[in-house]
Structure formats: structure tokens, C-alpha cells
Length: 150
Image 1 (tube, rainbow, N blue to C red):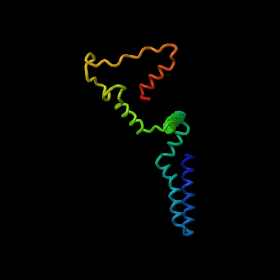
Image 2: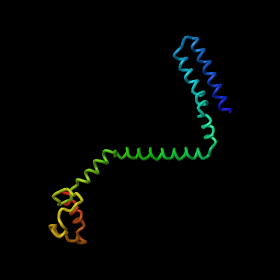
Image 3: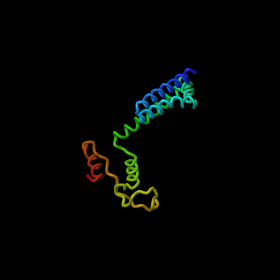
Image 4: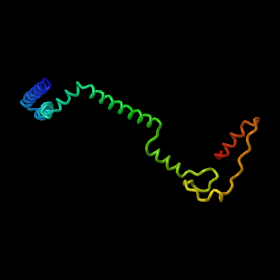
């Protein structure tokens, strides 16, 4: 009841100020003031003010606003981290496409996920390298570099 009275008083005061402004030949400003002063009256008439009053004193509503705020904060945090990494949606799609078209070392065609030959009919690849001796620490590193063509 109090909220409706206050909103109505604000609307009447705003319309009075708009009338004085129009009397001073500032019609554009007076029209704008009238529009602003009619907003609280419209909110009272639609019931939005009563909803706000009921919401303001409801702990469940405040918990809901808290959950919405947390959701928004998590969303913005992930967006900020994504921007810092320089990863966009297009970058992820391009990387996924590049992974699909990747060629294994020693393969002659892109891996499609379907074997073209039966396992028994495949060519035998090069024999696996002999295990490195304990005294030769850099042989495994050299093998990795050769594998990547460096």
C-alpha cells in the first residue's frame, strides 16, 4: 500500500514539474519529464511494484538472485579465461578439423578411423628401436627429434 502511494506521489510531482517546464516554453524537456514521471504510475498499475515488494522480502527470491549472479560470474570467468588463452570458437573448430586430417608419422594417407586393410594384410613397419643403454642418455631424445623431423 505504501509503495503504491509513494509511486503515485512521485508521478504527480513529476507531472507538476513537467507542467512548469512546459510553461517556460521548454516543450521537449517537459514531454521527457512527463514520460519519466508516468513510469512509476504504470508500474503500480501493472502490479510490478507489488511483485517487487513481495520479492524484496522473500529469502527464496534472494537465493534465486544469488544463483543467477553466480551463474553469470562463472560464465564471465570462463569467457575471460578463454580470451586470455586466445582460443575462440573458430580456433577450436579449426584445431578439431586439423586433428581429423592429421597424418601419422610414416603413414601415406590421413587417418580416417576406418582401416583400409585387414590387420593381417598390413605391411610390417620398421622394427622398434632397441632400448637405450643406460650410458646413452640422449638417444631417446634424438629418436623423438627424428620422429618429428627435426
